[in-house]
Length: 148
Image (cartoon, rainbow, N blue to C red; front, side, top):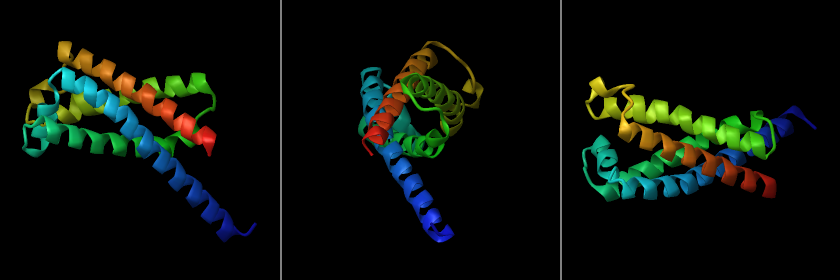
């Protein structure tokens, strides 16, 4: 196999992995979005772009979920295979995005810098949502990867 052909195969596999990640992120994001809706959190997400509206918040949340899933798709091929690793990776990835998103970026983007890394009841509920998101996203990514 020539170097050029090998690079094309590698690029094709990476793109396939990213696309699977985006789709898995959207599935996990939809579940997490419903959880957020029941807790009344979507208007706050919409406020990030100046529209305190649950529909805008959900759309923005889904875009973020797709991005996070795509990033996962670039990382996961380097991780061990198997369902135990998938679940652990999903939990860890959810926790990472909880810290980055809910504890750091969200407060900063909403102009609430005093709330960075503050953990109260709302943040604990958010942790549960992020972990659920991570597990669902990782599981659906694995199911898609197994079918490929």
